[in-house]
Length: 474
Image (cartoon, rainbow, N blue to C red; front, top):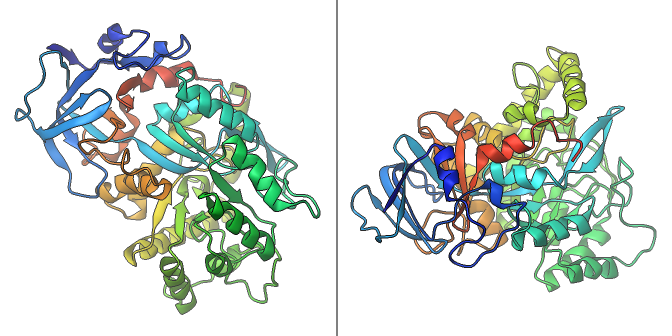
């Protein structure tokens, strides 16, 4: 057997151009592959398996032909003679992340708003480096480009996660020019079928649509077995749930249900009504119960709402990835925002939402997670996904619950939990090896070494190194 002590440098000696079980990779991909052996064992690791069950210590995991073949107490599994052994002493293994509010564009700030710039050559790589093995683009500015990237990744020609690609934002107005996608009496059914026929597998509705729009969108999408999610404004959560929506983005942060005298189909700001809403308000609890009864999943995205004061300029340590002129711009935004009344109110809103999310979860609500790399530009692929796990702990979830939210829950929603989402015998070997004991130190989430996708191990640090200073440009 081959024995490997993970430092990554030694692992990289194993690089070849094709795996022994047939997956071919291009020259753009192979430099980032650390492990391609058919049979690999991770020994003596701390295991958080994504099921929500308690952390297990001193575990061995056997990968054979891209599948998880065995899991057991260290020393109890008999490995095949050709097994490559990776010593996981002092390391943790978790499932690859399945995150449901991601984008392949960067929100480039401009005059208090932003322009979405497609990060074709950086974000797909960074997502994988940050542990994301499956992602949904919850709204696309360049849906055709997203589909092409998905296909290139599947063909082994680009580095990145498996992708569930959504439609462009279904939107009649839009606060930036890139958002509007529906015009006048345009036939919504034809519009949806156009994208479905191209390979789109999710629908994202946005702020300015009518109840009749949403009713038709849900009807057409469900007939094609495609789910609908929404970042709503003109339509309340209650209205959307009763119409049959599958998913609502940003948990309760986008809800306009509590705005007094809100008119039907009018998009109004809901922040003040949410800030004034008591945690135990009967109207809030009734809405939570309705969402549960209607089987509506909520996507929790604390990364895009994280305040500034006493926090990072670019969350998750992602400052190293930004183009220098953008980092300078972000530093100026940060300096202008810290220790202000607005940021203090943002913190109160942030903490209030954490309590709502915990309550909804305790009541039995379905929650998935994602980062939404938009906002002011401080949320970027990969780094934000790691930061999200830290924020789940800050919210009040246990480490076992946090990992489940970021893995199995997303897999369940996408209906792929039979192949991914947990470290379970028979599932694809989608998992993350990191240095440190994550059950004792949440900052270990930033120490990813190898991200296995379908049994192929990618060098997280090398990928991140390759994109330093490039986000915003590529």
